[in-house]
Length: 239
View 1 (cartoon, one colour):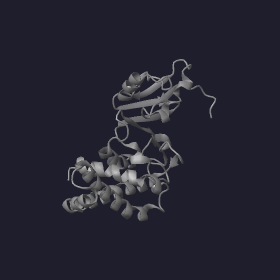
View 2 (tube, rainbow, N blue to C red):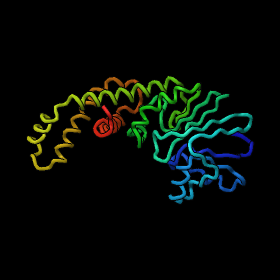
View 3 (cartoon, one colour):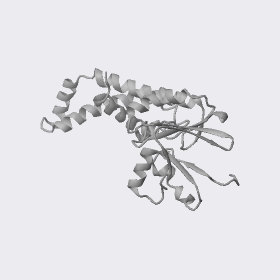
């Protein structure tokens, strides 16, 4: 809580669960609402009265000096297609990277609903390149440390590498022949789904014992993470 006037809002990204309360500040005169240009363009199109339109936009990087503090804003695309911000206060060794790491928990569904798993795989090293003691990921327990980032990185890479190995080592011909016996030969989409389901099932079976007692929510979201990794491995991975 503060008795100081509010002068500025910074949007981490466009999602309603993070900026849907901004309308509460609509009557504050000369309020600066800072966001990436892509976020601003999206909000103009959506015309949502609960998400105020930014009036101070930038392409990729911006430094703000306010109240004797420096706030460094850097754009990324690990989560939402319109763009995401790293929000860093170097004097406080404070870093906020929303929807990337939830301290003590596995990520939310599908690696935090990532629309770009390729960039999501890189985000942890990008976070760890900063000098910070306090980390805010925006959900649940909120406050975290470097160790929380390192554990989530370990989990994410374990899911990716496990899925990739199981997918690439699986005999697709044998798996399809087995599926034909169960569902018949006519529905090719169904046959392909049976193959992908087999990859998912074997990946979850291997991963779950390694993580069930290390991160909360593994029992809830692990399969969704595995399927996100399957899509990347099957259609996007260069190797």
